[in-house]
Length: 228
Length: 406
Image 1: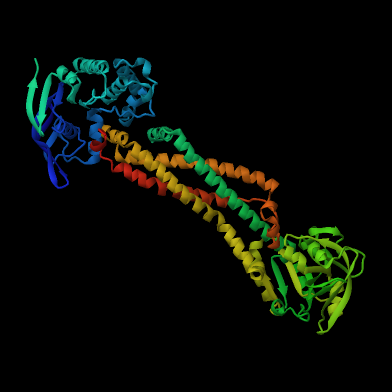
Image 2: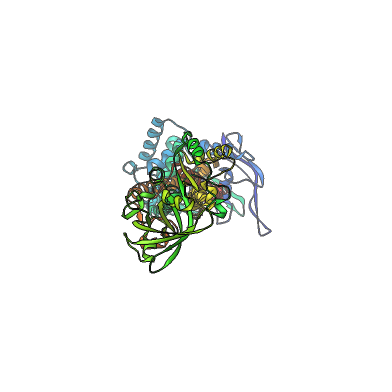
């Protein structure tokens, strides 16, 4: 059963009166438990597609449905609540809150969800431990390496128990060892807890690990391949 | 809310140096503003008290034309009736009677124009603090005949010392010129150099005998239990004695009222200027904080923090930063005013001498009231709102999709 479904998704930006077609009539579905990469050159529309799926941007045309709920045209307040409880985000630049510790960065999102203190503590500790950061609970982002920061970001994305995680170029700022390490962690979460990951990347290391690779060119899906 | 307070407080200390500088500016601004206001309040209060308590009093009663014409025959008729009336008024703390004349004082060396005040020693002592200004010699309660006291400044000008004789020349009630010799028994120094140079004091009994060959008073002056009842008491006297004119301190000295009114609003205006300047500082700091944190704010909105919460978070940061500075500044100012209020601030080195020409003490005792602090608190709230709303709205305009990748 698909948890994400886009239908005729288009996005046109009017840059200085010259229309730029970032997405052209994209209809695609994602199943629960996928470990999928959206690849393509810069400007191919992969980030725009992820933004539409994540409800961060409105399409010019078409619709997005998450688990049967149409998020296109949803009121902003409702959409923010929907994102909080259904979608996890991992960004290229980590985007951790610098004044929070690793533990606070992870538990913060559960505070927004008004989870109980006990649940919050258990979940944050469990995720940070699973990400290999057991001894970094009280470290602030500036005290962590890039790889460690990105693992905190993944733990944060998982903390809200989302239906899927959108990861935009998550390894772009990481060295090979950190990138492999991070991918191992995410693969493990996918395999053991059936967490759905959708990556936007042109990093071959991520593409090699993905079980489904969607190639975008000029705002359209050029190729959709499933491995093994 | 607890979460937002927690995040906001941490955010304030993201750049300790920047927040510290702004906090320092707020504290220094509050402290300086309150201190300047308290000094101004102290000056005005002293000026008010000096004028009222040393000589003017809250209400004066005269012949209706005396204030303008100052003729010796314009004395108060049937003073005993007025004395009896005044004694029966509970809101009058004490009163005194004065015989007044404009004239000339002559020493062997020179002469000068003066106002001669004939006072009832016991009543004057009970009503004003003038007797406390005697610096040399004795007050008028001496055995010496035709005793006179004058300001140190006038004595210097006339080159006179205690024990010397001077001649006073003035007009009598019959429009005759009268000259009489008086013995200098004491010198005084008030806060007003001008007063010290223009006023001489003699016993009322001596002066009125020379002016009218009987006891006459040109002025009744009274101190009330409460200065605010001046208007009511003056009206009562005017109603009871239609042939006399009772005037309040602010009718006798309108400039004193303006000074008092100005003093009441001084703190507000000084702080308004300071807070306006601080508002730009806070606005600048908060805008910088927003521009620096665009990606982070975008991330917060992306992961599920509502715009209302983001707005509140930025507001809280401004509120907490400003409030911390304002409370610390007010506390510091309060302690400073308390400390200086007991010791006084000597302004002699910064033009204090010229201040005494205008009736101000060179030592000022700062005063700050709870009303002043209320005005300041209101201004702080306005400042926070003015300086925080714009950056908060700016934060609302962030589109997560545009900033999270920057």
